[in-house]
Length: 170
Length: 150
Image (cartoon, rainbow over all chains, first blue to last red; front, top):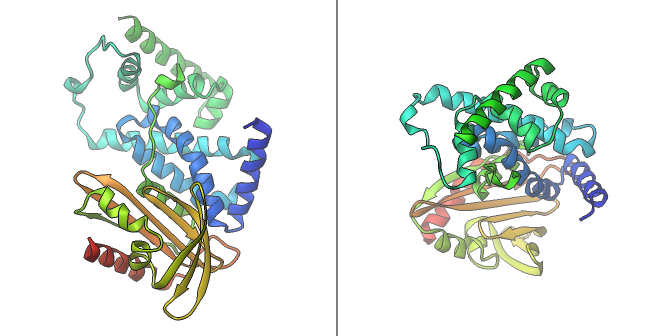
């Protein structure tokens, strides 16, 4: 579907949902669930499903406050990143760190390598990396989304990339 | 390389919780039942059969139109009220609304059994809200009826 038509559909669905049409809400859920899953998983890792559910709960609870329906995805992304970082921190507090549980290096599957590297980063670093490399955001946008200064994002990104590169080439 | 990054897909029960969170007054009744998903959904997915026996006080539910996942059904309650329900039905998921009624059912495999969730009630026109009367009781009754039928 061309972007313009997809955007029109999104705007129509958001407005209908804001008027109380629960079928429009269900369609929005189908639209947003895979996207929110892609944002939450690299940050929340094993808690990805909990994070994505919490993010979508927050999205639908506050859908009435969304003033610009065309901004739905960016708005949902900000909520998803916040919930994923929070969920990851909550899980880290609840579970004792077990270094033996780290996956072995040199896994033949590249996707497993990405997961391996993400495991070594803090939730904030994972968020910065995902926003840049998956979502294609510039540093300033990523900084405002995470509520930190651009310089902080730059240094986090530098460290995340460094870890990423070292693990990738080890 | 984006396709190599981890992702997650929410099961229908989690999705039901998310959607119900946006509907004021809605309550989700969730439980594990000791029956495989296929058995549970053969009942709940049968709109003109098991669904009406489990989910509502409907005397009869008749599907009048179906296009892919979209479905339209006429329902008549035991008290004589009629409703034209529209919505979406797919394995593990059923979401139907009429002007005054909302029915949501979800199911997902859970080990050897199934996790099921119900929500719904009488809609407040023009708002994403339900009249907060009987929503908990109705969910509990749906669960009891389902367990009895399995």
